[in-house]
Image (cartoon, rainbow, N blue to C red):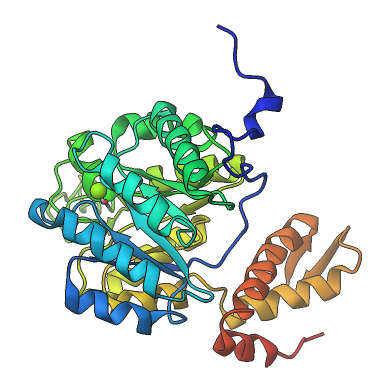
Length: 361
Ligand code: GLV
Ligand code: MG
């Protein structure tokens, strides 16, 4: 088989389509807030949410009833055409590639609001062939509509085969912007035995060893601490490595227990610590959680600046509060500092909090 030349990878896939991007900019995207454009009450609130959340996403796929698919698509077009999104990114989640709706989604959305759409989220991606299909179709539609900025593509990781093919998906097109975990569909596709949308499960645990009785035998019925484990650790870690390898961005996904803001925050923080840049929000309450969790804390930035000041040219090692810091710990600190600077540009409250930090010697 003769592969496409590396030189051709960055050529448009249709005559007159915009040049594919060489870098995916690191735009703030702590929360991707989902709304149903067929729900008029919800849709009416969207213009007022510009500037309060990093990404507004009009959802056309699951959670929109089959009878409402056309209304959702039309509602999204109306919102896209009539809203000035300012600093807020505007995304959509189209229907899956095996559905009867997706072709109309793309052929209607691109000419109508393709100049406003930053990213198209594609659900249930199985392999590179799904991204190739979208890539070519978008190029044709962009060329036809005279769109000058390429629309980016985000894949949801929610099939076993998608997880197995994660590398080829991330590298399938220069348009690839990132990946989200789709824990609900992924659980079903893998035949996991859960019934939730994201989050943990009390049955997935390890238990402390039993204490020994006086006769040296294990007291298996004695009270023993249990430690709930994270069902999603493997997939998120895999996603983070694949995205970092390909210069694109990993996200957690939906957390369905809207009332449990505590467990939601924990799950989001695990994803942040492992390397994710953001998550989905299914309710305005979750925007606040995501904005807090996916920004470095004031303590982290204070520490990072202290290490940077002490490390001078960035080589060698220093001791700070009894701990060794070196080139590699400085690099971790600089990741946090870069993220803080990027977020401070769009979030005045965060900027004030970071600016108020005094550098400790
Ligand atoms: C999201 O789409 C999921 O299936 O979890
Ligand atoms: Mg899904």
